Length: 156
Length: 212
Image (cartoon, rainbow over the protein chains, first blue to last red):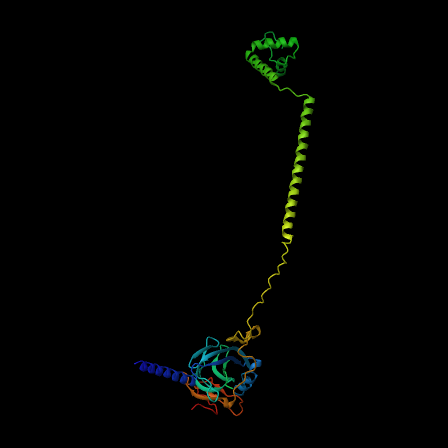
């Protein structure tokens, strides 16, 4: 009888260990640090913040009339995998970021991003680099809202 | 006062009556006034009242002190005054002396070293604990406030490192409520891929890595 109870407990422990291992293997419990920058692009001036020179030159290839680029806000949050988090932007707008999975074998992270005035986008990206998102949201001064999203940490 | 009948004689003047009361009239005039007064008893009664008042005044007038008595009184007053000033001056000196002794006693108590104990060192001021950059994580920051940040590292510290074309892979894109679909914009001239949502509602026509 006693041996039967002990073997039953061992089975429970074994099952719990297997479940934890599976969760860890899928990245659950891990946190991904998401950095989001808010940028306003305008055609009313040609001032470009020093952090945005590369981004400005790239955006101007598509939108040559956008000559001024100003960094407005920067936020970073550590998000557990599977957690959806809102990032405040400007004019009461928000961007929603969901970490679908942490860095995989390719060292890429899966994200789902919902920016203002556009649908959700699911993508995977490498660590440590910003992906620009040129939204179609415009302020009352017709400045264009651009987001930059980066994930960390990166596996060695 | 030369009339034939006493009642017809002219009335004596007030000065005559006053001189009569003071017994300063000549005998003839005095006799004439007395005759007139017998004819005028009311005036005579009034004069009699004045005479009694004068008598009462004379017997009740205080005796005037003579000069030696006044001199003695003055001498006593002067002695008392100088004696009072002298005693007051001595009292003031006593109060000043007491105050000086009290002040000296206070200084003695404060300044006198207590026994042979070494002087106590003032407690060393503890350094003000200030958080370091490792203790603080700046979660969100307005870009305009970067220069005012004293401790901590802002989320972005330098030029943005942008993703390369091979660093991003789109998995799925949902259209917005008006049908607009954003897309990954990767052109041959671009160094960086961008997700672009066009201003018009037409789906983006970006070449390259479109979502499937």
